[in-house]
Image (cartoon, rainbow, N blue to C red; front, side, top):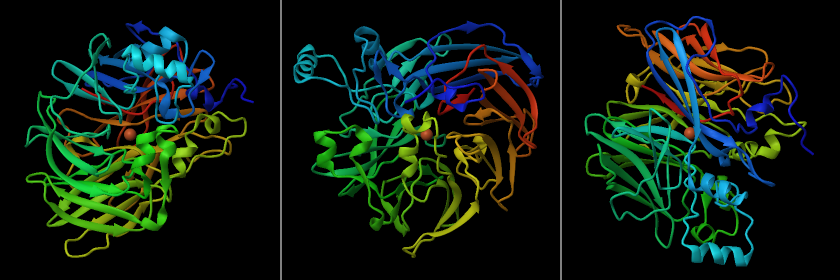
Length: 475
Ligand SMILES: [Fe+2]
């Protein structure tokens, strides 16, 4: 039996937030650097039940957009649910109506038939994972194909957009990579069927046209949450968390439950040229699992690839809400930051551990993407017993593995994003922005840290909690 979270309880971060607000000025403790001007947008789940139906997994919750407006040392805040079809149908019917990552709606045969005849689109577009700029607004993305457009000023949902192509495929990643030189966004679209393949696509600026760059055919497609790019290549890491295509097409179980951990397959790493799409190399290494790549770059013809790696895919189950909310929750698995080197002519990837603490929800200074770099930022789950969430911010010097951390009792941070100080030249001359739950107070704050030391500069506090989210962007 689950009970309501007590004070000082991290579980508040996995409970729903009903209200939509618009606050001109948040109370500030310390100070926000006057040079810090822009908007922090965040995406993440915020509603974990509909009527008496409950979602099963952190990743399933209905998406909410959050906006922190920062300027002149002041901070405003607004939030709105994304009007995904999952949200709209939940409001209309009072039940979970769309399939999510680990939850399927409970539908009788007659209800399922009625859904079909009504023509309503019940394929989830609960795009609660990432945000990317698009034309005069933004897209919210998840792993189902359709992006959902929203207005950056009002956070109002503009609606689902259809891609302007006939590319097959049912699954994509929410972690796109922008390529300034090619004026295009790269992504992977997985087609599951009689022929299954990972398709590398490029989407020219301002369009929704996915142009096929190259592909890798596969018997059992892996679950891919993210991938890497370098200046010349796309790097796909194929963990042995795989699905029999027929199981996914028949969908007798929620999406992720169809995947199986088959460590005997090991992990394969595919390197595909951005120009021309040829496979430039395939490498093998031991079985492991990751959601997130940290960065990748080229050293001559060798590719260096940094990943937040787990020994296995158990972390997927760790994030089930029954586990996260349990009275006696187990700790969640900790990733380690690993470096893989892909040397042409060798079939085995070289691997070493950069640092032991987790660097989950990893980020880097944006200008270091695809380049040699010094610092990775992230969250760790160092945790007291019974705390099943992230409880520290970390900065890892990837050159020597040294770790700086920020920790406060009862504080549970989300993805840190680095913002460079204008005119600064050092890679870490700037701030880290992270939304942190203060479980003692029952509120969340935008925390501003000096990225050099992870010391606190200031925080702006929202009058309620913000459920733990995933990713965002600062502009
Ligand atoms: Fe992610």
